[in-house]
Length: 72
Image 1 (cartoon, rainbow, N blue to C red):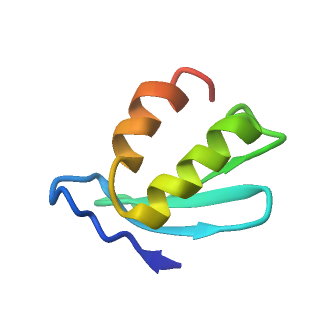
Image 2: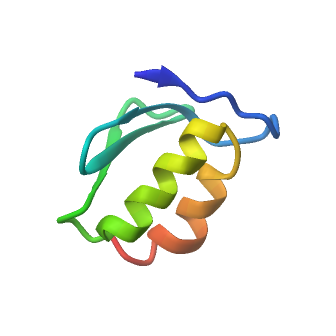
């Protein structure tokens, strides 16, 4: 897994791993890995957005809280 850069300094995300059709996210203080995939509740549109936020190191936690929690 890659360490999340956390540019804002207050993200709940600590690490991520990008696959061709998914992203796996590790949140701070939680040993459980969360997998969001094209075929899962998140869908390809949101997974691709999450990949961009992860690579950028900013906004991933907020995006998940705003757009993904209600879908999965």
